[in-house]
Image (cartoon, rainbow, N blue to C red; front, top):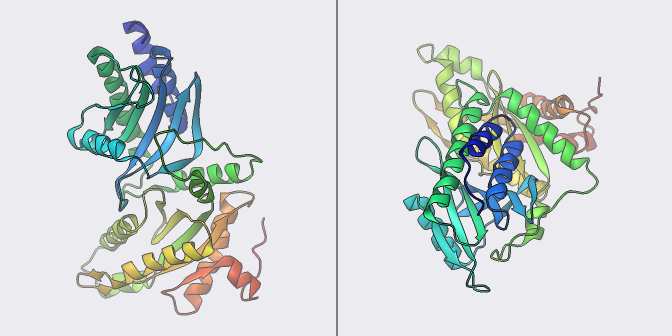
Length: 349
């Protein structure tokens, strides 16, 4: 590892915290670490805390001085036992763990934790190369702490103050990101490292995104019937249920009033339908104190090659309006309704 220079280190911290886009921040972080340990291979993973099995999502990598972030995360859920055990120990103990490299006794895989202000491990970094001394390990720890703290500050700014779901500005940015990726002729798909047994083809397939516009049925009637209840309480409870019932790599947003948006990645329409129906049932079956049951309706469209985010929202809204007019408490797809002649094609302005 190159010698430590305090002035360069301060400059590196300033560079990492000078951006607001997550991908750029991660690129800057890995650039800094590559400058200090150019011979190492670095991979930055998000920890998938809500998965049934402990999983990781590859976000960025650096190898042979080539640094890149991914258009979409690669879920790496099939790791050798020794890696899984070491990662679990890193997450539980918040300490660096070392995994030997069976092909080369002089090289190791060092697993570093990145935790937020709530002391939760949100990411790990795996450095493959020569084992570093305690001083340099501490340096990497410090950079990862800056990274995680700064991400937390950005994340707070991206969330709705009432529900703590992602806000409308974050929604527009995410849809735009997906549209750009969909319209790119070739997507950059990173080959997973040698220590991974995951099937990359499965990760690549999960590149179809579906947007569901969610509406709380009879929201105004519920508020009027229970005047002692604040409508915000219902919004908060529904928000928590939405967030609880999506996967780590899906996202939920507060859209407007009693409307929300969910974006899920799914192989095909069948699995997308199952996911949205499951969310609808979970909320419908959840007992709300003093209110009883609350139902939702969802209008869905695929994010494909639409002109901009507003067109996608309007397609989903067409499907949602149809659901509301046909009894509510149901999931409707824009393309299904269009093919059946039940709605007219949304015409762009």
